[in-house]
Amino acid sequence: MHEETENIEVSSESMLSPTLKEKIQNLPESPGVYQFKDINGKILYVGKAKILRKRVRQYFQSKNTTGILKIMISKISDIELITTDNEVEALILEQNLIKTLKPRYNINLKDDKSYPYIVITNEQFPRVFPTRKKRTDGSRYFGPYTDVKNMRFALKTVRDIFMIRSCSLSLTEESISQKKFKLCLDYYIHKCEGPCEGLIGKKYYNETIDLVAKLLNGKTKTLVKELTELMNRYSENTEFEKAAQIRDRIEAIEVYSSRQKMADDEAVDRDIFAFDKTGNDSCGMVMKIRDGKVIGKTHYYMSNVEEKSDSEILENLVTNHYTKTDFIPDEIFLVNEIEDESTLKEWLEKRKGGKIEISVPKIGDKYKIVFMVKKNARLLLDELILTKMKREFIPPSLESLRRDLRLASLPKRIECYDISHIQGTDTVASMVVFTDGKPKKSEYRKFKINTVADETGKPDDFLSMREVIYRRFIKTAGENTSGEFKGTEDASFSAKPDLIIIDGGKGQLSSAVKVLDDLGIKNQNIIGLAKRLEEVYFPGDTDPQNIPKTSGGLKLLQRIRDEAHRFAVTFHRNLRSKRTFTTELTEIEGIGDKTAQKLLTEFGSVENIKEILKNNYYIIEKSAGKNTAVKLREYFQNKI
Image (cartoon, rainbow, N blue to C red; front, side, top):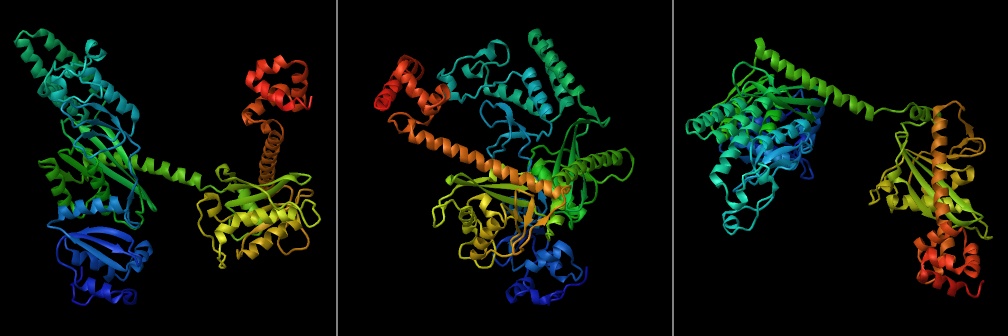
């Protein structure tokens, strides 16, 4: 690095405000955390440094910055510093701030909250159960388990081997001495030793819980050794029944251990970290080895890594993993060097309460196993990329439609509108939404139309179309004259369509275009689709245009138009049916929509009900009930 001078050299000095320049000139030479902020005070990036003065100045002294980093630096308007006593404190503070603030330009490590843990609760008589939430209440957590089957097997093994409680009773010395609880079935089938009635003490129970923790940490060899010594002591003291129980536990632990793959002849505890990246995505993996056996692996997806160094990605992976787990092994293998390894090691040794060894194997079997972990991370990363490609897949019909309509970009969001009525009664409109060529039914909308007739009293589809387009776009336009869309509470109304389809010819299209112009919405792609010859009308064109009958774009237009028609007709029928109920049966006091629907379903029509009331009253009474039959008879007595 070049020698520092009192006057900072910046490649784009005009980009920095005088206040920011002054802050950079007076940076302290101490460890700490720095936060870059934009003009609105939003956090752009959080980082740590052994010497804040050197680290922060590097961003502004480099003249070869490109890509995302250059964009970030151009947005920096302020710097906030938090000094710490040492680098370890800076590392911890950095991780906490990143999790809390989620800055845009930091590596984004996908939260593993969807993965389950096994928890040993912080109680006088702890419980052991699966959970997906970690709490800072002193409980111990084991995992996360990316394979739920492995988690369930581990939990089942614990319950089969150790006699621990499965209840959720609040067991305290006071509640036990007062005999508040009674023994449950678990005691009688030898699944629990009855701490609820004080049949075992807190010390003995927690010694059993410590054995559970060793099993969950994969320390099976250590556990078997301790239990063998205990079994021998019971045997020497002629406590053969207890010795037999311990023997059964050892056998069950050995069965559990046999399912784990041997990774090393030595009984070592080791975590192996590796990652691979493509573009802006990365997948990191940690393989856990306990007593020389692989007990599991965990992977993390990371984004925003395109211009991050391998050292920064790996450090982020390691620190995030160990903030989520309590167990820290004696050895850690890394796929590449970490720039600030000494700080990381100091932090981990402080958490462990003992020495650890961090190394980067270059040759031999140790290198091979690190390479294997990296290969597994690559496979998972390929799966992620493939999933993204499927999500981003553009249907050929969408590209064909863009070409047929000569659009500048793909019409990813298409809205289609249709009017439905019978001789001007119960006029309704439908709005259907297609995204990426597929219907998005959660954003369909329907409208009851108020403007249904012209000056002569005849139904006017043009006025109806004006009304529905106005109601759809008024909230996004408001007083806006720039043509930009504003957000609304309705998700369907807040998004700007790439293409609007009006089900109808030139007249309906002109009505819709007039409303958009009045609302100040400019440059909106909109067409009219005539039913008879499948002709497409464009705003301002006198004559329609034809799309080739074999075009995938035309088939997509037809599908969207037919869906809008179906949705409008269904709403119209429901509205008309409801109106019929209101004018007949639901006008009778005490008879609601459900009862009216039931009567019409059973008897067919109101006329049939009148006829049956007149000639076979008991049938109505038997079917609808005495009270309903009386109400019907009283209402229709002057009509039958």
